[in-house]
Image 1 (cartoon, helix red, strand yellow):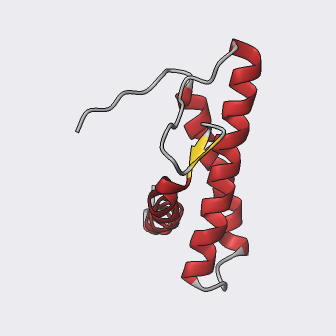
Image 2 (image 1 turned 180 degrees about the vertical axis):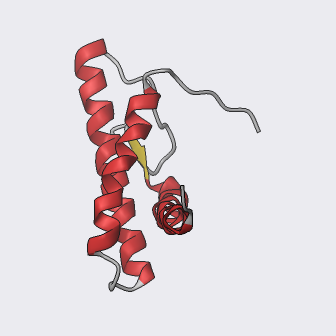
Length: 101
């Protein structure tokens, strides 16, 4: 398994901080619905970031080329990973709330 990333991805990944306020508002919603909401939000951030970078740089640093891609900016193949990532952020948030500093 070989992978790589770009420095420009650090602030893009940092956009995940905006999922935190949603966690409190969606606490009563079933877990599978919350996962779908997180998935849609993450895809929206990934797509809009790719579109913005393509406009600024002339190309997007990543390009999905599988048959499930949407304009090369996102791929439907990543749905399970982003679904679980959103729920993972919830788990991490709940864990961090239990810590006392």
